[in-house]
Image (cartoon, rainbow, N blue to C red; front, side, top):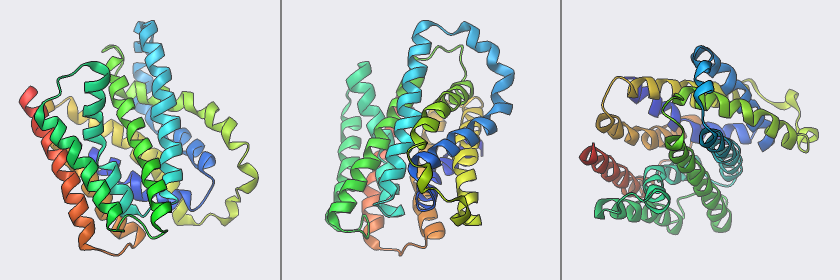
Length: 290
């Protein structure tokens, strides 16, 4: 239940980010996200801060990279991309995360390039290409949709980097502490960037539902999702957890229809199904390796 809840919360980030970016400038929204996320993670992380004393120089470097890619890069690319893309289009592109993460592990960490991993990567890319080629990725026109997909894919790469860099952090640092420290470190960076957009931000124009989306973007998708996922991981085998990764894109797709009111199209399911097949392949590969 914890693993399922964590992945469903992660999946909600795609449609919620579109609501957020329609309400306020990107860097202002990102500042609020990491601030709320750090505040929500604090109860889980403060009791474990003594772990920081065991951090090595490599851990500190990895943490810095996690802040750069996992917090700053992911938030900026995700929010700018969702300005140009439908929630369904964003959900399908984000579903490529497991395959892209596997590719990153092969290229940068020397993991074996099995046939199943390569087929999964091909399916992930194929589903996104199919979505764009059929015009089902967004309503803003081909060029805008393609640019949006490219930005979301950059966010996927940042998410993959976050995952892979997390593996390089010492086992002495728990993932919840890493997420808390990364969120905390990202606050001054986004505060500096948001200065240039603050004049375009009018809090009075933000609706109640949009404020709830901002709060959820930080407390729900960043903090609670992380906490639930890693607590669930501690209670089960990695091979079992891998299967639940398939719930993330399902959650993103379904919530795009519910929260954004987007029209259902059979082509959505076709592109999504191809990408979901890649998630299942990666999960089976992980189960085989464990």
